[in-house]
Amino acid sequence: MAPGVVASAISLPEAHPLRAMDALHLACALAVEPDLFVSANRRQLAAARGAGLKLADVSA
Image (cartoon, rainbow, N blue to C red; front, side, top):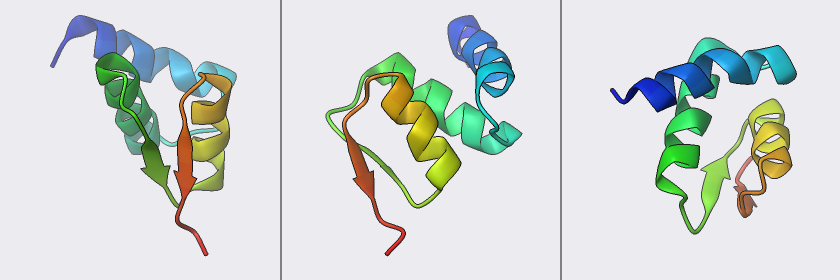
């Protein structure tokens, strides 16, 4: 795993109420800059929104 992804996964929960695996999922997405970030986790979606990712909320 890339050191930047690990560093991002560690720092994300400091700014957002994320669990470790949710932070890792988001950190990987931030590294690859996807066209769309898909999640059903509201806290993860809020953090992704704050990072400027385009979102798809599949919680409904």
